[in-house]
Structures are given as structure tokens and as C-alpha cells.
Amino acid sequence: MRPNHVWALDFQFYQTSEARVLRYLNITDEFSKEALAIEVERPMSGDNIVTILEVLISIHGAPEFVRMDNGA
Image 1: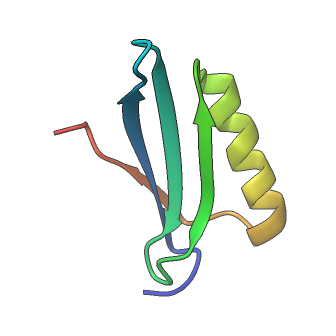
Image 2 (image 1 turned 60 degrees about the vertical axis):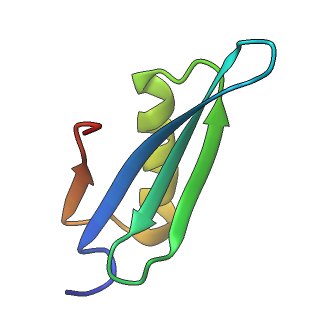
């Protein structure tokens, strides 16, 4: 509908040749298609995600909705 209406959070996983897992968190504004954040961590905790969202909210303001899929 408009910028900051819905942010989409998407997790992706990648395994290195040493069998270590990297986790990617992509946060996108669904209206503008702007990538608000692309974060890569080996362990990514809920605290990490909250911190990332707090930084984004301080820059862009809070979205009305946050959407995450169930991985299906």
C-alpha cells in the first residue's frame, strides 16, 4: 500500500565447503522493494534480530506489519 506498511523478513542458509552454516537475514520493504538490511551471521539469535529491527526502526520508523514465512 505504501512504504513502511509491511516489512518482510526472510532467512536463508548457506553451508560452506568446511560444512559451517551461514545464516542470512534479509529485510525488505514490500512496497518499495528496498532492501533495508542484509545481515550475515554464523549464529543469529533473537537478540541479534531485535537489535537489527531497532536500528531500522530508528532510521525508517516502525512498519505497521512485519511478515515472516514459515520456511515452506
